[in-house]
Image (tube, rainbow, N blue to C red):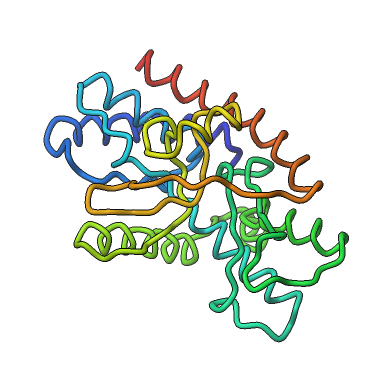
Length: 241
């Protein structure tokens, strides 16, 4: 199933579900993991706007799976590292070339050749295709997606209950989150996954993506251009729905 197929199937589902949320639970935290996330989050935002209940700090696109894959795939290459002790930031969107792993910012720092960096980056971007292939087209990522959804939802819940210091990457409407407007201006796109500090009311602070390697800077340009089209597609659907 292509991203276009997913859009045709899921766009209406998201619009219908978010309409229900807008009517009956407008203060809910909405965590969208339904693909294509790059499009479905803008759809949700536009539907909420139509009902006069849009609050950008309470709407999230879940990109946690990309972060999980990042630490896992880097650990596989290094061979002697526990992926749970490795943090690989992943920003951008949640499909293909819009996914931008920042291997240069890994904590702790890792030593990788350019060939390894490019191979790992591609695998993080297109890791879902491996699963579809392994299942011979009969399915896609399930268990790992469930784990990613649980991990992000747990973070939102903990933050809503007052736990501090929780920072998770998530796909948000940058101008609507403190600290995000400057990032949006710098990147040239309004929706983008960045590290976000979570708080009792949702997204509390959006953090810049930081210094990039030359290779990552090239990938960023590609990601931003593709994201612009994804966002426009989602917004256009919602406005005509």
